[in-house]
Length: 66
Image 1 (cartoon, rainbow, N blue to C red):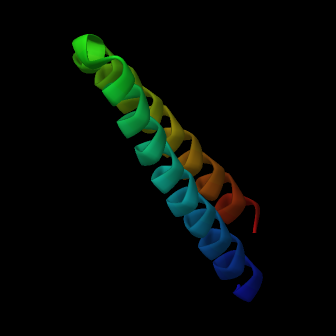
Image 2: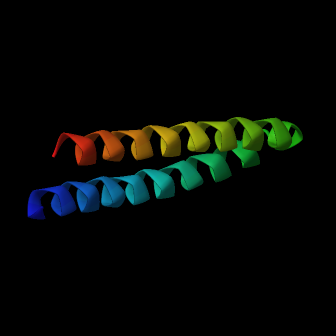
Protein backbone atom coordinates (compact mmCIF):
# COMPACT_ATOMS: atom_id res chain seq x y z
CA UNK A 1 0.00 0.00 0.00
CA UNK A 2 2.86 2.35 0.82
CA UNK A 3 4.44 1.65 -2.55
CA UNK A 4 1.19 2.57 -4.29
CA UNK A 5 0.95 5.89 -2.43
CA UNK A 6 4.60 6.58 -3.24
CA UNK A 7 4.04 5.95 -6.97
CA UNK A 8 0.93 8.13 -7.07
CA UNK A 9 2.76 10.97 -5.28
CA UNK A 10 5.69 10.66 -7.68
CA UNK A 11 3.40 10.83 -10.71
CA UNK A 12 1.51 13.81 -9.32
CA UNK A 13 4.77 15.62 -8.59
CA UNK A 14 6.07 14.96 -12.09
CA UNK A 15 2.72 16.08 -13.46
CA UNK A 16 3.00 19.38 -11.61
CA UNK A 17 6.50 19.94 -12.96
CA UNK A 18 5.32 19.20 -16.49
CA UNK A 19 2.34 21.52 -16.01
CA UNK A 20 4.61 24.41 -15.03
CA UNK A 21 6.85 23.76 -18.02
CA UNK A 22 3.79 23.61 -20.26
CA UNK A 23 2.58 26.96 -18.89
CA UNK A 24 5.96 28.53 -19.60
CA UNK A 25 5.97 27.08 -23.11
CA UNK A 26 2.42 28.33 -23.69
CA UNK A 27 3.27 31.86 -22.62
CA UNK A 28 6.34 31.95 -24.86
CA UNK A 29 4.52 30.56 -27.90
CA UNK A 30 1.46 32.77 -27.34
CA UNK A 31 3.67 35.82 -27.17
CA UNK A 32 5.54 34.85 -30.33
CA UNK A 33 2.38 34.01 -32.30
CA UNK A 34 -0.11 36.48 -30.85
CA UNK A 35 -2.52 36.27 -33.80
CA UNK A 36 -3.00 32.51 -33.35
CA UNK A 37 -3.41 32.46 -29.57
CA UNK A 38 -6.91 30.90 -29.64
CA UNK A 39 -5.71 27.97 -31.75
CA UNK A 40 -2.66 27.49 -29.54
CA UNK A 41 -4.77 27.45 -26.38
CA UNK A 42 -7.26 24.99 -27.90
CA UNK A 43 -4.48 22.57 -28.86
CA UNK A 44 -2.91 22.84 -25.42
CA UNK A 45 -6.24 22.26 -23.65
CA UNK A 46 -6.79 19.12 -25.72
CA UNK A 47 -3.24 17.98 -24.94
CA UNK A 48 -3.76 18.55 -21.20
CA UNK A 49 -7.05 16.63 -21.28
CA UNK A 50 -5.33 13.71 -23.02
CA UNK A 51 -2.56 13.71 -20.39
CA UNK A 52 -5.09 13.73 -17.54
CA UNK A 53 -7.03 10.82 -19.04
CA UNK A 54 -3.79 8.89 -19.54
CA UNK A 55 -2.64 9.55 -15.96
CA UNK A 56 -5.98 8.52 -14.45
CA UNK A 57 -5.99 5.34 -16.51
CA UNK A 58 -2.43 4.55 -15.48
CA UNK A 59 -3.25 5.05 -11.80
CA UNK A 60 -6.38 2.89 -12.17
CA UNK A 61 -4.34 0.08 -13.76
CA UNK A 62 -1.86 0.24 -10.85
CA UNK A 63 -4.66 0.10 -8.29
CA UNK A 64 -6.37 -2.83 -10.00
CA UNK A 65 -3.10 -4.79 -10.28
CA UNK A 66 -2.42 -4.51 -6.54
